Image: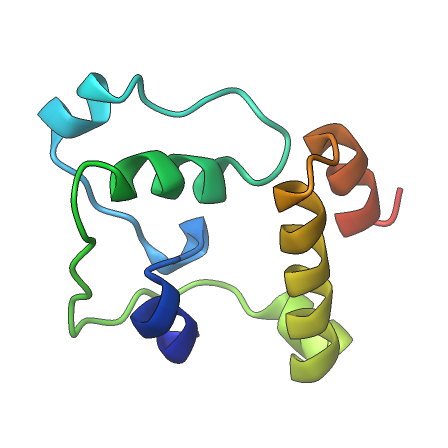
Length: 100
């Protein structure tokens, strides 16, 4: 995850995204989406400037990573990301992510 963030400046929401209120308001805040809202807002934030990576830890729950395994979870996330970038509807991605 650190490598992905360092190479592509693409943190996911559970990694902690901090943004100045004025910038957040200036880009229109979060968009209502069932999935990929973190990816979508980071894309808009990157147009405002390069994200800074802080040398701090954010503690989140790892249940999906433990349940699915690191490789499977990583591949699944990247496939969903590619599908999103190719224009697949976020509602469809949500069903796939949560296997509904």
